[in-house]
Image 1 (cartoon, helix red, strand yellow):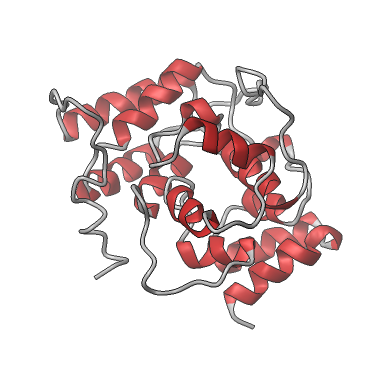
Image 2: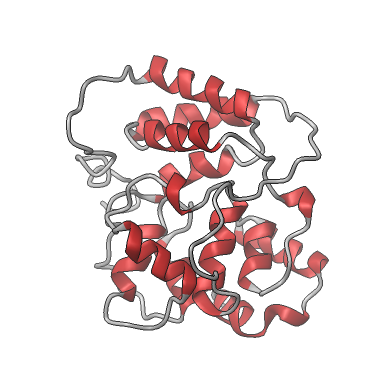
Length: 236
C-alpha cells in the first residue's frame, strides 16, 4: 500500500488504532507520532507536546528562520537537534483564546492539531501567503472549496509536511505541477526540530540563525519565497 493510501485511510479510519500502532506507522513514514495521532483524530499525550513558551519569542523565531536560505536551514536544523532537552511540566497552551470555536473534526481539526504540535497559534506562524482572516477561517471550519488546494500548498511547508502527504490527508487530488506558495518543507523541518525547545533555547537558536545569515534591512516582508523555494531540491 502506498503512503498516500495509508495516510488517507488513517484520516478516515484511524480512530481505532492504538498509540503504539500509530507510533510504528509514524516511524515507517518518517512523520511525527503526534502528527499522525492528530490525523487519526486521537488525543496527543502531553509528552509529545512542546513546552509553554513566550509567544513573542516564538513568533520572532519563526519570522527570523523564514528568511534563511536552504543551506542555513540545514545547518540550523542540526544545531537545534543538538541542543539538550530540558525537562519541563508546562505544556504549550495558545496564549490568546480563539475568537471563534476551533474545528474539532475534519481538516480544520487536523490543521489546528499540527499547529499546536509545533507550539504555535495562528498569530505566531510566519507569513504564508494567506490572510489572517483566511487562516482563522481554516482553523474554525476548513471545508472543501476551490481554494483548498492553494491553502494546502501554503501551509504544508511550514508544518514540515510534503505536499503529496498533506493532500492525501485532505483527500485532495495531487499533481506534480503543484508547488509551495511561500515556504517549502525545509523551513518546516527547522520549526519541527524546535518543538522541544524552551523560550531561552529559541532565543539561542535565533541568535545562531543571525550568525549564519546576518539580518539586513529587508524592507517589506520577503521571506524564503524570494528565490529559495525555486532552489528547493524537492522541485528540480
